[in-house]
Every structure is written in C-alpha cells, then in structure tokens.
Image (cartoon, rainbow, N blue to C red; front, top):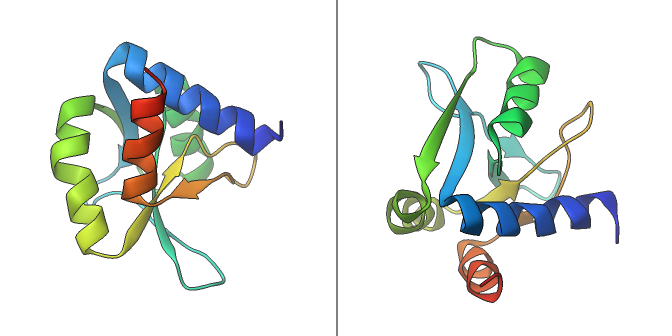
Length: 114
C-alpha cells in the first residue's frame, strides 16, 4: 500500500473510532488546494497531531480545531459537494500531499470502516 493509501485507511479507521475530524483554519477560514486538473480540495485529518503538523507547515496563523463526525457528515460534506469541492484526507509529508475523495466516496468509505 502506498503512503497515501495507508494515510487514507488510517483516516477512516480513526474518525470512525474517535467520532471526530480535525481541520486547520485561521480567521479567513480553512485553506483549500487547487490541483492541476482544476479540482479544489478541502483537507481534514484524523488526529490532532496530524493537523498540527499541517498547521506548522502551512503557517499563516492556522490553528487546529476538532469537529464532531456527525457535524462533518451532516453539514460540511453536503456544503463541500454543493461548492464542487473534494475532501483531502490525512495529507502528510513536507508538501502535504495525499488523496482526496468526493463526498459520496467519503460516505461509502466511512460505512465500510464499520
């Protein structure tokens, strides 16, 4: 399994177990990433430590916050889908890279993680 693949598997295991996701944001909101194909990703992490590393790498006064899984699923994911965003999960490494999924894929993988 690739590094991104193992990070993705860890994401779904941990968020199901802990019932929370982690994000980084500042007063302007959460950063997004624009891929070369024009797809914009909104990143989340499965643990505080992972999100803290991302906040340090990106800088810009980002702070780490948690969100209940139910809030994320019922509010954030539908809003992201409406806005045409995909969800980045557990991005890691010095350039914060990893996989992104559509909200439908997120729901399917969360269900399969039971």
